[in-house]
Length: 79
Image (cartoon, rainbow, N blue to C red; front, side, top):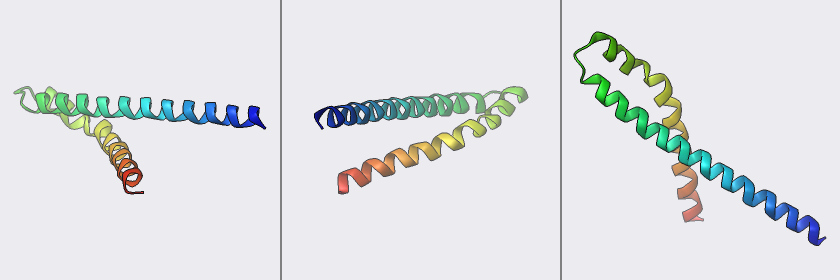
């Protein structure tokens, strides 16, 4: 019984650690991509502005991930 509880606890802690790390990586990528997008939009080069629009492909899913992270944190605080 004790070994089952211990292995379950270790698995849970490991999963929460990995999910927190992935969430942090997603937020850092979102910040980086948004910064790069803003810098590229101010360029006078047509190619760089096109690249800025192409970054929307990466930014949109990361915004969704960010919204889910914030939503779960708020739900944890409220419960």
